[in-house]
Image (cartoon, rainbow, N blue to C red; front, side, top):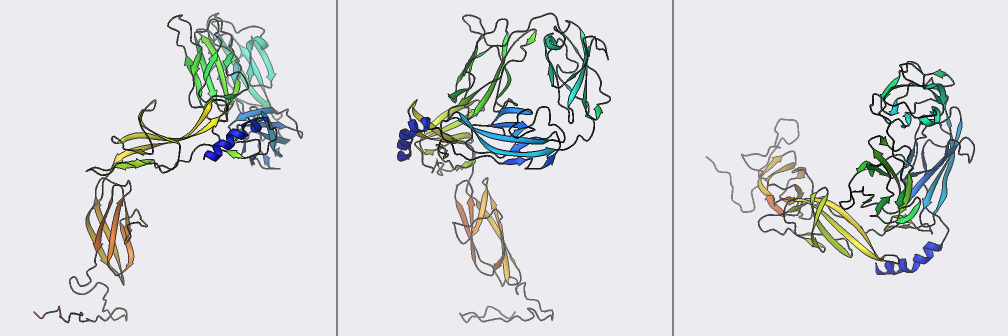
Length: 537
């Protein structure tokens, strides 16, 4: 371990300055090379541990990008083209991986597939924003709708009456969003019922039976403008794993919505979380928040949207940043996968033993340090002890954390940790209540009945096992056996000697004098003592 730490310290300046890259690459999963697929598919590829982000580019010519310019998918290994794919076309795919050490992307996969013809006209779409029937909608709101399979474009009309087009005559739009100011020359009228009809179409014709959507606008209020992020700035690298996110205050904002995700298409970290706390001294909105436990060497996407009584700011820009490579896993510039996290093998459930039994639990994996926490609730833990051994105070939920420390030219010391949640429950050594021995043809079976609050396993003749969950042993040669019953949570082993009685109630059950030539005869053999146990009555 010490040798690795010294080597990392010596190599750090070299790694930062080196510009080469040779790392593992993802492989296409779907579609495969040359495969013909529908136009509304999701493209997927294999995951590579240690990759900071994936990028994808789609075009109808080799190296082209007219379908999708080179776009980061973050940690997602799936990409659905927002407006589908063109029909009867060859689609060229390029998949890149991004390396934070060199601040560069590498082309990893390059292949093509075919799309099929549109099988039919598209179906109707759904209004996404505003939702159908919404009220008090901001007059500056953008209007968006759902992609419909097999649609090439959409015929959109907007009116003040059902089926009307007073605000926008039917217009062909090859996007999924329109802004009123761009298409109407102004905002939507205030305090009005707005009707919108969206008819998807392709070269086979128009969707049929599509009804109007309706929503009602609010008063002539002014939406807040979009703000700008202060930290981390867009495309920043080496962001700490627990940063303070901060942004500029926006005039007229009464709260901020923050969304953070590991891909630009989903907010899996925060989704429109509301921040409206105020500084008690100035009564101004607080424009920063702490984030804990980002993962190292990952790309994150963040959007900050100001909001007031008129509604949310429109089209606020999404920015992105990369966290520090930290403990990994990540690929160094030589293509080696680096993971400084210590290995931890610890069960998800352990038992404590009553009656003065040893309830000490131990971690056998080597590490520089150990911490034992009790989980009070999902948002609170209490540190109870440090070191490789721990005596739980009672049943409950706990977490073990082990860590190694490495020299870091930037922060001085880099702590790389691994942890495991586990449950502590009370257990006990088994009490063997009885054994049931059954005779067969030349074999016996043994069943052991036990009691106790533990979870038990069973073995024959060897306290070290092998153990089985079943308390029944079958097809055993006729002999004496010692059965061991072990508590799975370490509260001890019980045992009993099982001696089959072959003379109980006279003859063994495998003597069958039925004339079939099998086990028809039974012969008594005088025991070595010379004493005949059979007496005449």
